[in-house]
Length: 297
Ligand code: ATP
Image 1 (cartoon, rainbow, N blue to C red):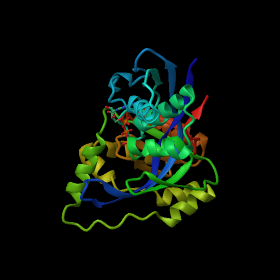
Image 2 (cartoon, rainbow, N blue to C red; image 1 turned 90 degrees about the vertical axis):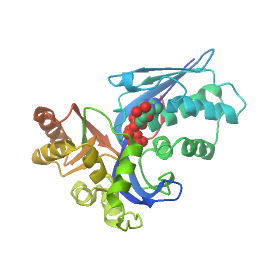
Image 3 (spheres, helix red, strand yellow; image 1 turned 90 degrees about the horizontal axis):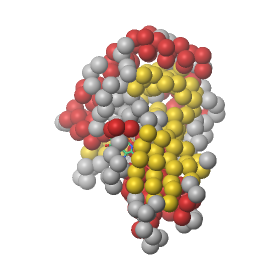
């Protein structure tokens, strides 16, 4: 018997970052939107914990116990006095180290798959607690939809979304490490006062209305200057998407994936074609949003 769980990627339509806290983390006002690019995690009983991965970026995914999916299985098993003897297979379609929370998605997927396979039937709050221990973005991967994350981003409030938003994601050649991008943010903001991160009411209203033009006017990412500083060629990708008619162009999370909001599905196809033709990215993917959170198939 096997259990397969499908889990979405995310884009941050607002990522407001506060100054570094004494513990090194940053307070955030993080508006997450789940998008229709998915990893699938399949859990099958095994003699010992084993991870396998398939997909175009599979070679970059660790297959040992540092894999976030493995850590999720170990955390759930420990709480229930079980041995984490499971084979986790990850069918990976979310870009690796791309700022789209692919590892977090796999953690949430593995957690739900193991909970189902082992019959541990953890309450939603217990699953969310384990997710928060595993990483700031993991709780959102479990719940999907749209949510405002505060604290390190792990305290979530679900948000209303009044329509479908059509995105294009340009996948860069290479990755960016999230800690390195935060380090560059700290360097660039040194000496300057960093304001308290606050969610934009205009942006929340645009999401609730399903108004793409209004959302485009309000998206923001405080990590973008740091990501561009470490990966300057992303400026060319952003320019190419804007020139192709995207309503908004921004770095996704810590990058280097760039995100383009478009008017409708046809515009998304046109922007994706133009981005591919521009030669400024490795590949371009269209995806609608919001997408559901981790779901047992
Ligand atoms: P985020 O948007 O949450 O900052 P990201 O999308 O930039 O994350 P990930 O794809 O989650 O980045 O991977 C970051 C690093 O985590 C990878 O380079 C890899 O070494 C490690 N990692 C651990 N587990 C996984 C996993 N299941 N899938 C991908 N990467 C993983």
